[in-house]
Image (cartoon, rainbow, N blue to C red; front, side, top):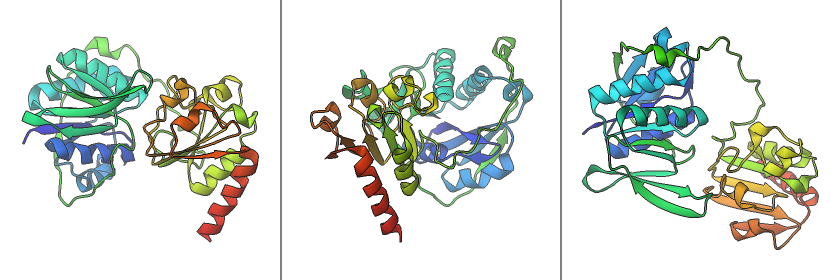
Length: 319
C-alpha cells in the first residue's frame, strides 16, 4: 500500500486532536506516515504511533522552523517527490490551507480544501465530500492530476487508536532562499481561555445579534457543557465579541458534534461556517428566522430565559 502523508499539527510535541483524526482517515487510504516539523519528537512519537503512524518523518532544521509557511511546503514537496504518496492530508486551518495551496503549485497537483469526509474510491482514488458555494451545496470530488492534497476540517472523523510502533526517519531538506522571506522574530504563547479551541471543539455555543452585546448567558451555558464560544459576524462587527471567535464564511468554519446558535438569525454567511455540524440547535425569538430551516431542534424563545434554564439542567444532570 502507498504511503499517505499527514502533516502533524503540534506545539513542541503536544499533538493536537486534529492530527489523530487525520491519521485515522489516512488508514482508509493507505499506510499513514506523519511529517513532524519542529521540536518535540520524543514527546510526540508514542502518540503518533498509537493512532496509526507507521513512519515519522522528522524535520528540525532551523531553515524550516524559523520561518513561516513557505519552507514547510517545500519540505512536503520534497517528500512527495521521493515517497510518491497516495495523498497528503493537512488540517484545514488558515496555516494548513496556505501550506496546501503552495504544495499543490509546487507538485502540480490537485487541491481540495475543507473536506468533511475522505474515503477511498474506485481504482485507488481519494474521494472527498465538502460544502461549497457558502454551504449551498454538498459535493463529492476527486483529484485528477498529481498527488491528491486535501485539507480536512476538524471533527471530520473520530480518532481511532491502534497498536503499533512507528519508524523514525530524519529528513535533511534543502530550502530555497525564496522560501525564507518571512522570518519568525518572536513567539508568544496564546493566553489560555479555559475553553476548547473553537475549530476543534466537540460542542460550540454561539451568540449573535440577539444577545444585544451580553454574552454572559452564552458563556455560562458553554462552560456548563465544556464547550467553545462562537459569535456571528453581526456580534463581532458590533464589537461585542473578538473576531477570533467569529463563525462563518469570513470567520472560522466549525463542524462540532453539537452546535447551539443563540440569538442568531441564520444568514447564509453564518450558515456557511457551521452547517456541517452533526446536530444543530437554535434559540431565537423569531419563529421565522432562517436558522430554523437548518436545525435539528429549535426553541422559539428569549435566549436570556432559555439559556439559564438549560444551564441549570446541565449542571443538575452532572450532579
